[in-house]
Length: 276
Image: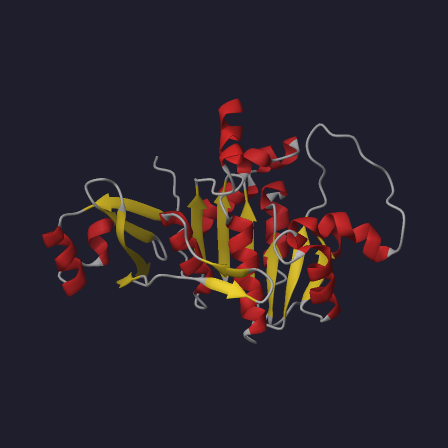
């Protein structure tokens, strides 16, 4: 069975591409799920255009960029980032998921687009959610000294890395634009007019994903990212929360998903895969 990635890549000649532009070729030709992308390539495998199944209509995707005062501008570096940024900007898709390897840009894309959406007034704030799970086979450091903010700092550093460091994230929190909510404190919440952003969602069970989804109230969206190769407990590997989510929600009009297979962080980061 073909693994669903949120997009299909296909080579077509100029004549066939012209028929897509003119509307002679419709979405059924490509067997796309709802919100699935079509990446059209040339004979060399280079992307030349992009489309998305928009509720049964093959819609052309314009070049997407995101940006804000903290992160600057992010432009797509590869076809999957192109699709991902378009999905994040799509206000008609309230449940968004990006998966991909380390350095693929999934967290940077989510954070950049989320801060932009808050600065533009489309949402009141970002609810930052992360399961506080240590890296597999590492020892617990024990209690962290200091006040509550000090104790939370290591927890939010993956967010801080993409919004101006420690001072940047503290500033966003002080403005009420970011609220940090450990997963264990989420039950019972009714969160309106916010982006719930779940980072490192590979470390979630199916039931925990259901818990987070159930907090999304009027005017809110849920954005998630994860890398299934970086799971840190056997329980997450057994539950396969993200895989279940993708399998059950594929084609749902409110759900968008893109897998990002290429690392763009650095040449050194790309070498990590050679250790597999």
